[in-house]
Length: 218
Length: 198
Length: 168
Image (tube, rainbow over all chains, first blue to last red; front, side, top):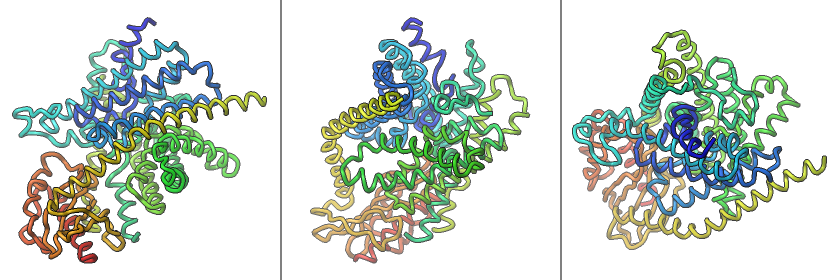
């Protein structure tokens, strides 16, 4: 695969959230405002880039046996780094993301890319892959968050939208709204995509599958 | 800490602030392993089980090891590693001493290593400044809430499987919309705390 | 066999050490910034409640209602500050409330909440109405449509008063 293909692959063809259905916890939880979606997307992309690069660099050094613990330490380290920096320089974002900032550590996407891509590919390709996946994640979050913010709060990036601001539907910003909007989006993707979208949740691309080695649990 | 306070923490963790349906934690197993009742309850029990032990281990480490030494910033790394090690340990112990439990929970234990609900609850206990007893009560409550959500949802999914939606809604989309409806029903519990204990 | 076991452990240990070292460094650089900002935010909120206070002294919260998380006295006896966390409709709601030595509310504000935008707005808009009220909170009624939020707010204020009764 050439690098452009890898990039496009992450954003569209294998969009981690909308196609692969991974990393759903943060995708649903922080997608109440477009601004938070961008913040979460940027934080996750940063962790992805760092972890993909280091894991690709160390792919010949890390023994297979302690592969998973090594990934855990590296990813958790980068997440803490982001956490500290965001707390120091962007406190509003730090509060908005709350517990979901440290939870990037257990984000399936980050682990999944480490296991599936970075541990088997050269550094530059891994970097591109991380950018693509990160952009795909951010894009999906932004779409979900935009719908939820526009209808739920009547604003977009904090800007008031006439008519909707007085007729907002608060349930969009609550948990049920998140499930519905995401469900409808996946349905839309299924309907209009030429590539075969995933119909179900499973272990493909999930780091847990690598850990447990069980494949789909039936 | 009064008994009433503990009850409030428990009810709030299990129902009012349900991990999955209100707080969006542990969505992956909630959607992925809820196809049938047996695996759903197995997963739920495994989470409850590990959550209890993880809290017992992580809380003292945070309070007596990390915080006094100004190492609070290592929290994420240490907690994730401890949970990973603990899961291995529990698996070995169960295999050797309680094989019956190992048979029913064994498949789900390795999944706990990167379970975000589990990790989040141990972090929240520290963030909210809970004592050890409060933390354990909160964890058990959250675990019970997870188990409840899993069991309820697996029962609902049985019916979804038999329905005949438009092609593009088959599978994941319909499951998500069912989750939304279940989540709405849990919003009915908001305010329970105030009216019961207020 | 021995090599198979030792190498992985060494690699893992080295990675952990390097990572911890890097974090320790970043933490050392940012720690003063974070700590300063936190103090500033707390001071700012408390000043907003009692502008005439000179400095704030933290109080022991033993015996206070469970919801009262922090309490401060002012050194020039212009009042007490209570930080109360209660359950609202959508989750925890934290308010800060200032009570003067004679038991009158100086001011109260919401520090953090997860209430539904729009629906709960009237509750937060009526915060000025609490100013000057005593423990009876006469004239403060629940807001229809947002009963749970407004009751949670009212209960938080009442909890602040029970704490005030203990220390006054």
